[in-house]
Length: 205
Length: 256
Image (cartoon, rainbow over all chains, first blue to last red; front, top):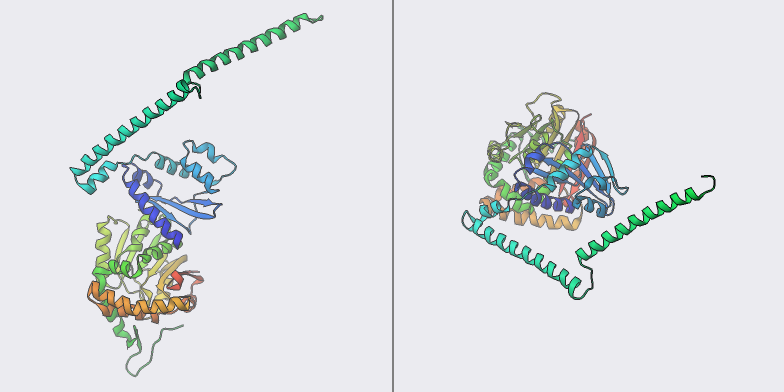
């Protein structure tokens, strides 16, 4: 019952988020009636995902047969949830996938493509004037912080590479790597040439 | 199994809470209770159960095994909590019938579902659970949530539900039951007979209806008795799940 309560809370929050994307719910409606079972082996937890026009329903138990069943330890399932390339992870030995994987991949794609219109949600709560005003302010602060973080990262990298010489600079490293590649190629050519000469030097050649 | 029907010279009696009333009057008295509480039914459910009724209903849906295209009957559906979820699960090819004997509850449920945009695959029927106006072998799933204890002849109602179910179809009975621990039982008694009528008085200005609720729960058959009643009515593989320490139990039976 506790887990069921937890799922109910997560479901409520998740569906609010899904409603903020204009395409998520119609795409989920197309998966209506499909059941995805996720069995976490460590810790042992079972989760059923039922997409529908209202969003995603989460259940601890589902009596009807699941269309797709995914089984694996929590760490791998979490990695799968966050990974961009899910297909390669799905082929890993630690995961077992039974049934129609298309349903799972479609659901993952919907969740990955989410573009949340949080400005609309803010305007809905604060009104048409205060909402966009606050959104604009938050957006400009966020952009300033992003630029600041980028500049700080650049300065720190320059300090480590140029001032303290703790690290090699990117361009310097790239030039050195190119030289090493060229040297490697030259050695390959020399080896091939020596082999050809050795063949020629043999008495019966 | 049979209901507590006391034979008198004039008419058999049955219980209405802790009172004994002629059988013909029980439906009328129960109807009065629900006419009185219909408008604030959902609010009272949340207050009295601390929101737990949502989890109990959630578990009922999980155990229903409803699929797209199924036909579902939600008896005593009241304000349509289960119907709403079933309507989304059965999809446009399925059908959900919300049935309630009480027209006030049915109106509240219908308005609420229409306001939420639930339409197309849902229909509303005022019906008595003892004499369901549906053909034999018609539904894939029949549910009755917090309604069976108000039915005068529970045996007849269970047989009627069996009749309208398709073979292999399942009946789910969600109802208050008997707490499994003595300590919880004592706390629950205090809560039911002190707090519930008080909350009823404060919120709906009707303490009597909520006193009836507490009394009717005590008069309702416990888990094992209801299980035996379902088996006697003709259900197979009857089982039950206790929830919140047995305060509520979900019984499930399959039509052979």
